[in-house]
Image (cartoon, rainbow over all chains, first blue to last red; front, top):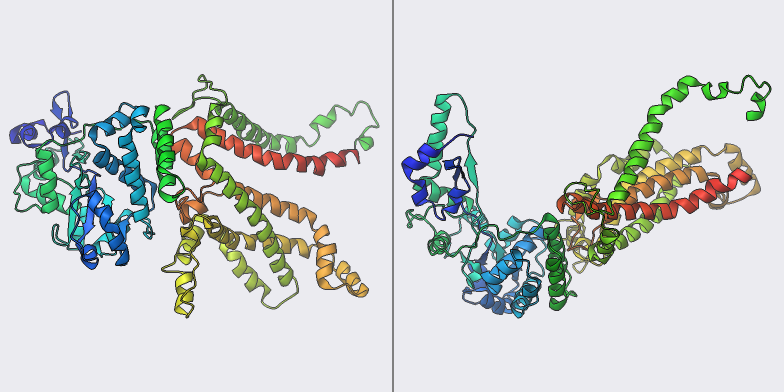
Length: 311
Length: 304
């Protein structure tokens, strides 16, 4: 892979990239080999202004207000919560609710320390209760893919969707304006903490100096302030640098950047489960979500069992 | 047979070398059968008792742990239940439909070739295409329900794929649509093998056609039925792509099947041991049906 250290040092990447660990994961033995281009986080609640207008309500400011608003939404013929039927979306929603309702400490205690007692705690009961609310609110949302679910929110057929920030790209394509046509609530508006996954570009090393020069120019372009704003607005993600022109950013990006600037991010590698344990949890979540005869207590106990035997 | 050859003692060893070329030709097949089928089956069964994760770990013996976990998982129990419903219905319905269609075509009708081709056509489609097509047909907003509603019956509801209680029947419909044409062709071939004289005789006796079919033709077609049942049963046990294409096991886990469980545990969850345990249970369930049948079919005849 092409060594980008000279570009990185000349432009001072280490000083502008926030959180800096994105650059750390591109760095090996002090040399930089890739360009981080965006930050993705799954903990967002997307709300349709249209839908709440139909129900004659103000747009909620957090998850609990959203749950309270749900009956009115239903009366107005709106599905309160859009949710694609694929398993990973259910899991994503549970993760988001767990961070928001249960808090970061609980999240880390369960996912990193595999503490089964933490799963049996009353805080976790609240998480499962919120998840149980969510499954009832999503009745009538018979779509498969996440972007179909996002489309329900865009068209005002659904009140909201718990989904990653990439949903923003769909709103952008539909020419909707953040804060006017839709609202985003990072951390579901309850606990404003986001994860910082993301994408990065690597460049293969070549012998041709012309190509190498072009690669370095592209790398430098990708991380530039203008490209960071316009790319991430279209992609639906957060820029990897905080020193951008805020007037060009939309409402959601500003909220996300404020959280990043405050350092309210989940630590790296929180999820330490094996694929096997992840799969078991996924099975449980999917069953719980789709079968209302599985009670909160039942699901919580089964979750605790999985964590107790997790590897 | 041995009696005809037993005249001279000197000729006896030559029996082993008789038809040498044919015997050599079968050796690769025999070896493949032994190594691939029997060998791999034993290897799988052995590893189902180990804690194999991403890679096989023959040294990590855990006894029946994988089986205990398997039978404690709701998803597996639902898979088994679905397979039982799908299997029984598929076998009965596709044989019945296939037989009726074959009998109708057997009545020397016009355009038989055309009709036969049309009915067999679904079988030429893969399960993935079948599944997707039926996903659209059964979609309440696009498909059947919408069409009937537009025709005036506005209360008509037919939405099996979004109802966990009956989703497996939605899959069954697609399976039958795909499979019965093939059963029909098999049975039709069997019917064509029935001697014309039998029909003449039954006509002379004044036996109605349906009675001839049920009491004379069906018993005579026994070997064809056995072939058809074996082929359908194999397709039932390994049903996977149809479910993936139509519902991906949903809503929730309501339409999961064992083959899908095995694939997902082996590769998705990277838990080979559990996947092997599940596939061993599938093998056992097949053997439970097969052994008594084989015993009746072949065991009895040796003595008789």
